[in-house]
Amino acid sequence: MRSHLLNDTTAELYRSSVTEGIERVAAKLATTARPFTGVTPDALSPVVDAVDLDAPLHDTIAALDELEDVYLRDAVYFHHPRYLAHLNCPVVIPAVLGEAVLSAVNSSLDTWDQSAGGTLIERKLIDWTTARIGLGPAADGVFTSGGSQSNLEALLLAREEAKASSPGDLRVFASEAGHFSVQKSAKLLGLDPHCVVSIPVDKDKRMQTLVLAAELERCRADGLVPMAVVATAGTTDFGSIDPLPEIAELCAQYDTWMHVDAAYGCGLLASTTNRDRLTGIERADSVTVDYHKSFFQPVSSSAVLVRDGATLRHATYHAEYLNPRRTVAERIPNQVDKSLQTTRRFDALKLWLTLRVMGADGIGSLFDEVCELAHSAWELLAADPRFDVVVEPSLSTLVYRYIPASVTDPAEIDRANLYARKALFASGDAVVAGTKVGSRQYLKFTLLNPETTLDDITAVLDLIAGHAEQYLGDTLDRAS
Image 1 (cartoon, rainbow, N blue to C red):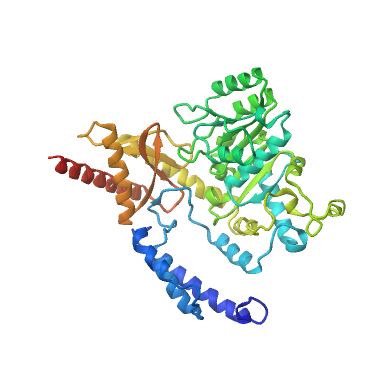
Image 2: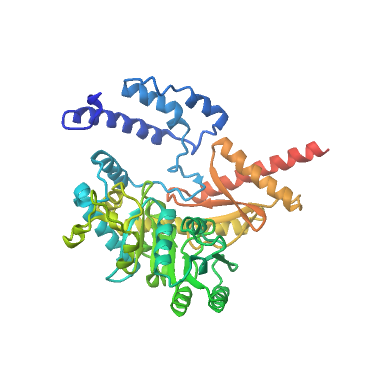
């Protein structure tokens, strides 16, 4: 079995095995006509269940043949221009190259003696990102597994910096359109179940700062401590960007930590035309970025950035076997001193190679393209009497629903939209997401593929309308 270990004696086997795998994936990408096959859990589960993991195939080709049946054939392919569902981007080739390199070398980014150059590359990218944000010379940060972990670490730092006699006195303020990881983080941090105060949004789905101001004042009047305000630069459903300058003013007035969840909107940091939409983010105490959303990186690639690097001490623990205290005095750069994780992938390499090959402007232009596409699609939807679109996009997300001319019952319209989404997914012709606005069921486009065209969107809208009308027609036939 030593023949399967990657080392100097098996380099050729590594080359041939990986090449064979790459050839399979490349062929799949080149011939995929739809984003999904429409396979159901009931159909695919028996295929996977039939695999006996205690009976190895002892052959790479055979294993890849099997992988075709259990995964590659029925995978959801985000690169397809009619995948329009979630915050999943097509990935750029330099980043995929980085993924191949980092997996083979397998550096762990917790300590210098496991990563050396990897540590310095990650630190360089953190500095690059904080400079793009404008956090100042004392800024720092660390790569994470994703936006949820970044938000958790930011709120941990905010909790430790807050001046409170009891965790029960702490309050966190977040938009009702913000990410659920804020509530989850509060629970993980042992805060009061009701500590997260939901702030309503305006017609553009942005946090209402007048309400935020009133809630902050009420918090202080009640003898409670405003631990943090979580502003969102790109909400998951609407792509809306909260009024960051006004929120920054309120955070300064109430001595409150300002965290900006820019997991989605961080692509604007590389934009050559829309960077001003993030004005005010430079005043944040911490920022979440997800490069694997709007920088076109493979999962996972995220970071949490802070204005004052000293606050990262709240995530620091020293272990004699790993990062003893003496290494601080010796100026040994151990990234575990800043991280909630210990063993951690060298995900920074993907972004490094992307910047070295494409440049920031190259990334930004791709994100600008999808934002422009979203605005054109919004105009299309707004002019189409078959659809109700909720809000003009700030980024690249559109929330809408089909409104049949012959039906007025909102519940029946909800069911028609739910059916249309499921039927479209089952067909494999396109993939769209769903959400609720108030109590009503809506559909969602998340546009992150510059290869998607307005013609693609028009075709998908026609498919949705067709499926919805089929459902309504069948319902009418059954009723009669």
